[in-house]
Image (cartoon, rainbow, N blue to C red; front, top):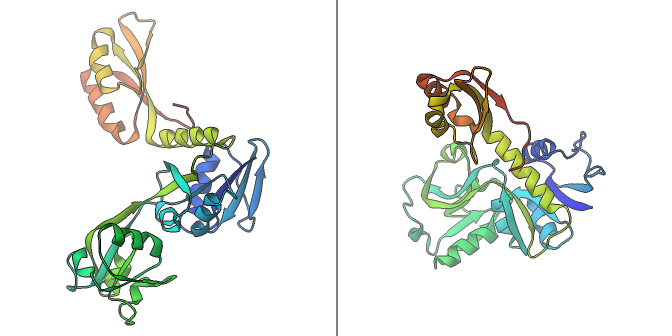
Length: 280
């Protein structure tokens, strides 16, 4: 069986399980379940702390896992990113008391508090910055006020917590993170190709819709330019030989604009339907 690690709680947990469910895999109904077997797909799921997933995959105990890119890089294990999953976006950044810092060059010789010491040490080392890293498990934004650090490096979503602590972001982002699928380097366990193909299908299904419309034959080229599809639109004859039916995949975010433009050039019966699953 393919052994897959899934976050058991936190911001990534619900979205990861939802994506796997859309990909056709059975998921747990009780959050207390730590292991679940999906015999139909020959997969065994292990529900673990997001921070631990990279460790298990890197050690080869589990084949693949879903975790955050920040957590994966922080673990510094023998694994690789197989694909990004399109959810759980966040940014890892520096922050300090308002007015104290404007660039990372000012961090030389300072104390930096973080929950991602492996990731931060690598970042500082690559840039030749000599600073002391203080590892904390949580509430990093309180470390400056409590005298433990001069600045912090932490995951930032809205920045509300930082502002409440009298701090501001400075410098370029250390890392832009999101949920990723990781696997052990050089390994290719049975079933992982199918898993990746299914997950990519979910991403496409979420980003695209199917558009159908009728248009006069002499306008097909103009209409197809608006809806080129992934390869080429499907064009089918209608009972009225002057008209054809066209079907094409389009970006969901462009739906209403394309519908308006098609209508303006003369297309009619413009319909849009969701895509539940696909293989590209």
